Amino acid sequence: MTLLLKNIRAVDPSQGLDKITDLYIENGQITEIGSIDMAADRVIDGEGRLTAVPGLFDMHVHFRDPGLTYKEDIITGAAAAKAGGFTGVACMPNTKPPVDSPELIRYVFEKAKETGINVIPYACVTKGMQGKELCDYEELKKAGIVAISDDGRPVENAELMRQALELTNENGLIVTSHCEDLNIINGGIINKGEVSRQLGVKGMDRASEDSITAREITLAASCDARIHICHVSTYGSVNIIRAAKRDGVKVTCETAPHYFTYTDEKLLSRDADYRMSPPLRTERDRLAIEEALLDGTIDCIITDHAPHSAEDKADFETAPNGVVGLETSLAVTLTQLYHTGKMSLSKLVEVMAINPRRILGLPEVSIKKGAFAELCIFDPELEWTVEPEKLHSKSKNTVFKGERLKGRTVYTICRGKIVYEL
Ligand code: DOR
Ligand code: ZN
Image 1 (cartoon, helix red, strand yellow):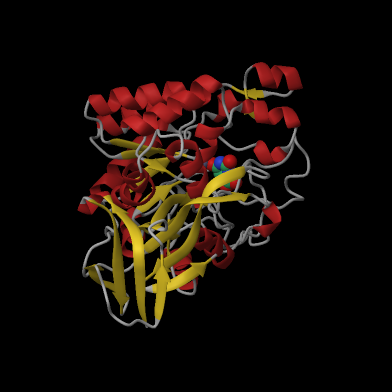
Image 2: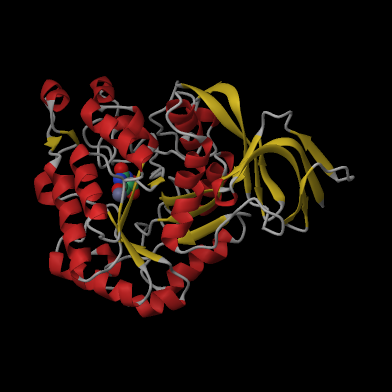
């Protein structure tokens, strides 16, 4: 199968590339770039508008497989990823049972083979995600793991976390941390502030996030280990991370599109689809997240794709936290940051494709002769409305429902094959 992409805007900052050109794909590889006049089994004309970037990578998704597959499974989660332009994702291990053994890691890798994209598992920091006993990182590494997380909750015992950082560092792994002090959260369901008071519901104090962010950075610095802070949502965490980076601490971090798009005002609807942890915060936080993304304090955009069924989400106060995001992430980022002139496409590629792979130590994906053809091809001008029932994900709990977005994935190519087509 040969594929010719004509008049495509190819953007890849790792190659200093941003130009309208043709790409030829054969046997899974990019074999030519430039003006190409060769026959191909399939020709796609980008008309100078369609844009090709390295396949996106989301280093923070929940595919609920094994055990909670009524919400999502590896196949449907991957379908959502492909529709969003992702050629790779890393799945959090808070499944049922949690992924904490070579057998479960093998299960994920096996099922991932059917997806046509790269689906890699995280393993837990602690056995059963119980926060009591560390997993055997050497054994997990041998099984193919690159990163470790108890995402969904923090490791509450600071000394255990310090040991985890030391041991993962020795094994060349990275810990990614869900920073929330559960004692401070104390049953809170949305950001603590004006909106929680107005609704008369228990709030989550921002100190829950800031304090664990500071703790993780202190612990990592004490043993010179790397640490990655998950889903940053507060201006306080941003300031702590920015200062730590200046001090040379090996800290990286991520945020999600909902944190630079919305505030807790969305919760006035009393709709559990707007609940996630950490929660939507205030305008001051939203602006700090945006600024930190643009100045490089925040390294990547993830989705924290966290599917929950309509039944799970029915009651505002008792519903579990989490929102889906794979199918809207690129479009929201284009709408909010690119079309407003705040973020260049090169920067977008860095935070959505290059940095996540670099943080996890995965092979880079680039647009150059001889590289594996892993591409996200999108139409930056295509406007569409988010209709939850049309999502590929099994769950429809999106905060972007009804939103008009500008920009959409049109083709996703992995290992030279078109794995998604709008
Ligand atoms: O909102 C969230 N949902 N945050 C998390 O950290 C976990 C996730 C989930 O698993 O549903
Ligand atoms: Zn989390």
